[in-house]
Amino acid sequence: MSLTRRDFARRSAVTGAGVALAGSAGVLATAPGALASQDIEHAGDAEGADASADRHHHDGVGYGPLVPDPAGILALPAGFSYRIITHSGKTKLESGESTPSNHDGTAAFAGPRGTTLLVNNHELKGPRANWAHPVPLADGLVYDPAASGGCTVVEIRPGGQVAEWVGIAGTATNCAGGTTPWGTWLTCEETEDKAGKNGMTKDHGYVFEVDPEDRRANRSPQPVKALGRYAHEAVVVDPARGHLYLTEDADEPNGLLYRWTPPKGFHHGRGKLRTLAEDAGALQATQCYDSGGRFVDDLSRATKIGTVYGVDWVDVPDRDARTVSVRKQFTDGQVTRARKLEGMWWGDGGAYIVSSYARDESPVHHDGQVWFYDPKRRTLTLKVLLGVNTDPERDGAFDGPDNITVSPYGGLVIAEDGAGVQHLFGATDSGRTYPIARNELNQGTDEEPEYSEFTGVTFSPDGRTLYANIQEPGIMLAIKGPWKRQRSR
Image 1 (cartoon, helix red, strand yellow):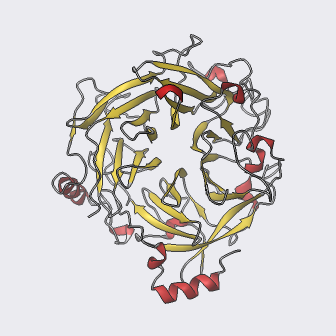
Image 2 (cartoon, helix red, strand yellow):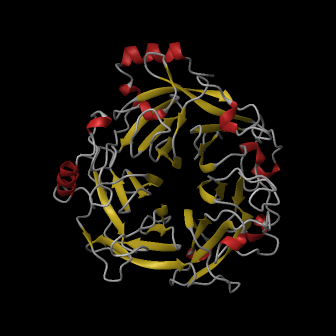
Image 3 (cartoon, helix red, strand yellow):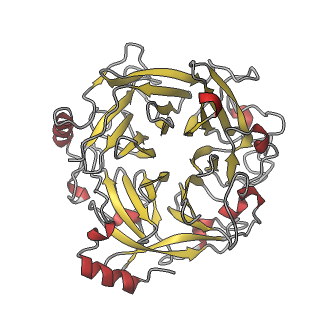
């Protein structure tokens, strides 16, 4: 049943501006440089960023200032440490080939006999010859032998030993993805390349399922075409209703947030998605409207924390995009768009959704939003808002959120993919933010430093270890320390 604009407007009038529709969940506020409940055009003050950072260090939120790393890799708070798990060009797979490069989306699973299994995307696009360390074409695990991307599975044993092998190969631009309630990883191709383009021999832009524990289940990989062909970024699964929510990282025009509804009688489980017909279920895109029932064309128009939009869903005409990209199949006024729709994570009964930034392709500029979709109320609520970072080379402010995870210690942990300095940072459920790590691996020069983005942020099943990647050259890190429950106020 859809939530009509009239129903949403009536409920908003009763509850007052729509904010109360968010329920009991606290409002996550902005990172340094953007102020909660203020208009976005007033955010981004450098002095405010420093003052905010100082407050974090003295009010019990976070873990204190970051300590520079003598090894030049990762700055962490005092008492924390890191370990390199895989390093492209240095560590090896079981088969003897090098760990592939360009680490991206990652998820951790509890494996057999006390092991931890991590599935690691490798965001490699175009022909294999373009990359020094593509994902090896492991026998039986290849979709398109011309493509360079895929996933590896990393096993960490109780004694600390590490093994790594190919989970899927021959896919393209494996960016983010998502875990499933049945213990697998859905890896997403962020491309629309068809056979014959960029050297590809098959169509790309699909979602594939990778089983971290059962290697045989990954043989003869097949795309889940029912989920559509477009520049996929991330996906989450609603364990109660069976819906899948998916983000699209694209522009000209901006991308969309999608929902896939399974066909009647379908039951999820290991390997079940690949059995679906290409047109199984319903793939739909968001149509949002404000508390007055007015259509919202782009999520960037929300400039205050706590903004709540009602959501309806519009059917995708041709999900395989045979002639026209999916996002271009809609006219103005049909769907709500957003620039750089990136990471997602299921938690608190709904989906956290990132819009990394908005620029000239969008009505209003910002340097990051995190939304929360409540499937019960059918609402999107703005939880995190980062104003435009006017000095990204200066440490202290955050911009460009990308991969996210819900922290077992409260709030979110967010991987930064912005300009200049790159961080992992936390956001509590009451609006406080704090740094967790800073990338110190300079791939540029002293005069013009360059730091790769963080990706693949995820906690171990026991919550003791935070895993994250430095995308280039491709380093997986395990971070440990005195984790604590973050004060909400």
